[in-house]
Image 1 (tube, rainbow, N blue to C red):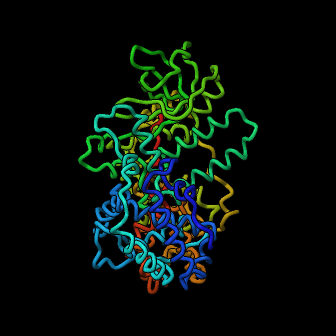
Image 2 (cartoon, rainbow, N blue to C red):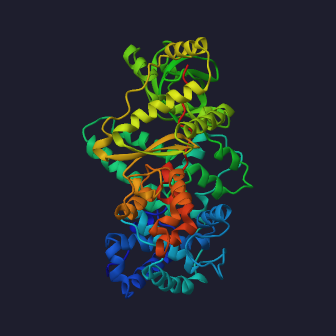
Image 3 (tube, one colour):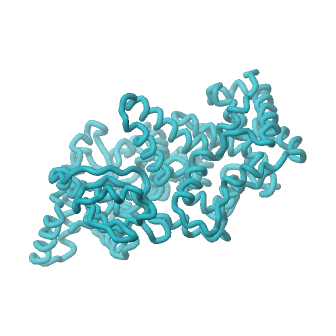
Length: 534
């Protein structure tokens, strides 16, 4: 604990590798923070929650927040601004009297300590209300107060979060998003840690594979497009546009970058500007701009199968990720057309269709009619599939399609190469004897196991008071359960659940949406589980 933090440790949280003229000052401040933490009477308690190797990192992390405010890089203030837009206050959990958005605040430091501890130690959850956090924040605030008037502006750091307003190249923008997610202090204990963990696993599992660099690049590009931060459940493009600000000409363009589509395509020819490709699973056609693809000359034979990632930037599809070719393969084509997972790669293209949301409304209404007016059913696990199939049949019958329309729909599905899904998992009962099926109005039917005792409802014969708190915590924190299911529980059951009647559990209700974004970051935003077939 007495060893000094070195410049190499400080630079780990920076988007650059070589020391700048201001780094010496902040390194000294960083060591002052470490000393304050180490000599604090609460430090022994802190180490129960935090491995010793993370104390240096926490010191660098908190000092980076200080440097951010001094240098006006707009990282922290982007979080404050977005949180305020969502919840009408700058921060969750803490009283905000005398809060100053232009300077350092003890509430900021308390929050950052809480966030850091819970981001790096995923196996446990530390309440934001413990004295340990607030008291540690107070002593660090004293260090920053003394340093504030002498702290230098790091202009070089700020340059990494700026971009020309007339930029047309998607890869320049993608690099900004990469910097935000993987080279920025605020997301270091979150998305960078996650990326690093995955890269270690890839290297360990592919030590002798000549394609290891391709695997690493593909993984990083996938994360860049899909990762949502624990803070507010936002994507890299959303943070990048927020940091640039609403006045920046690229603000909306960055927000409108499409989700990435990655999978198998047919090569269908080209012209001067575009390469024509067709997504095998869905038969959707795309024009890939040649500005983004150096390998276009290698594509010569029509219907060659290519594996590629693409994303739309400024109304053009750009190559993003990895690319390889392979000969025509009828088995692969059949598997792709019959893969719901592959079809779902392009689902977002249909989300804006009015029909999608109208369909969900009709499905919800049919579910309630089928289930005695309720959008949740509690069942033995072995009965879930039977219930689901019964509901599907009930819904199809409610459409009042003629026999001719039904036959035509089935034929279109066959023509599209889709022959149906595998049976629903028949091993549910091995996980839990009972479960539930919930109609999520944003996505569709959702099956949940091991949380029945979170729902003290007359229709639930499987509720057990002794399992209630454990089931509620599992429901709240497990990424596999949707926010809509959690809120259904809270809206219908909170007055009957002891965990929400007093203490910390009751306090959590004040910031429950923020916490759900934190716990379920990648799955917080439920999307329609609908694939258009035939």
